[in-house]
Image (spheres, rainbow, N blue to C red):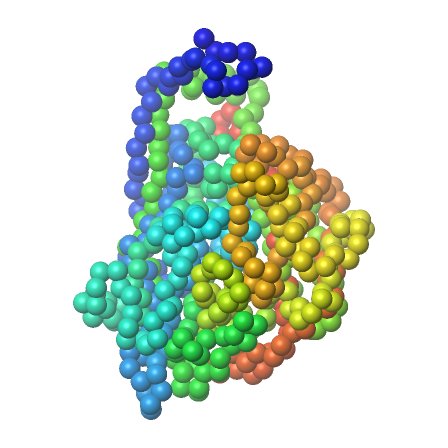
Length: 492
């Protein structure tokens, strides 16, 4: 007997049963070469057809993720440059998902940047220090002071065995196994309103993963030479710069896994097919992301313009990086030491900064000429806005994020965010479409910032750079409509 809804659920006495339920994990070998995948390479995965897939269990398994050491010994009295591996998702430049030939995602051009930004504001410290550390290399090993003192998961003998397998022929600095189990958007358990999808209704799902360039690596000579708290980077010698620029990474023997289920009571299949036969559609909502990149920004006041047409603009995040972030061979950046609990170091590519040096930094968004907030907000309010955007408000059962001090926020994890959709408590965040609707006429948006001071940084083998790059990430909700005969329609 189930109790009336006016009583707490723990007063009810009822047994729910799924009849004929079966579940199994399936290994999927990519249709592209999986023996060795180099930077900028492509991994194509075709998910099983005519089964119910648990989308939240999609994993990319990388038994061996390798980075190069430049040289294993010194040259001319100078130590070699060790290349350290960042968090696993840093290797992914783009993820494209199509169903039965219909592209359902917009193919975010800097997927890894978006993932890192959202990880900073969403992921809790406990998850980062346990699951992410063990599976996704969230605490990159960069503590060793010499190139020859390296971490290989199956011993030093493996270094010799694989030392010539990097595409540039260099020595191996690191060789670790990782499993990429967290994703943005359609494959995110909280980013899709339907976790289980019957591919018999939609056709084959194809996931195309494009790897990033080598500029996502962390290069170092020794611990003392790493960047200071303001993000300034050490200067490599000409020899070390040449080594750093050739450092590389490689993925070996990659495969994917996903869980498939079946419910053999006939009721589930009948319910879905009756809906389609009646001329109605099945609908699912999922998170979508768009990014806008504007380089060449100088100190002082800046206005970053962007536009988007969507049925639901949910959140807007803005941050800055130094224009040198795209250079190969950049040294690793040290996190601000005021942070109580952090990962120590990160690639220059993902070092998000406000470029503020005092209390004069101000920011404000404008959406179709409406200012949000309606005043120029202080730098500290950007950190407060992150809590509002991710609905991390209150004192009871509130999960944290990856920002552990204001100085770390300013120098390493800056993000100014606003929320335009309704916050949902205790439900999947895509169950409701409630954001700003800009269909028909694209929303004209502006991010105004003042009080920036951009330092000069010289990348390895290059000239001094004195400009910054703005990165704006917009989160929207898209809807996939499924009709009879595997007819699909996307509403962005």
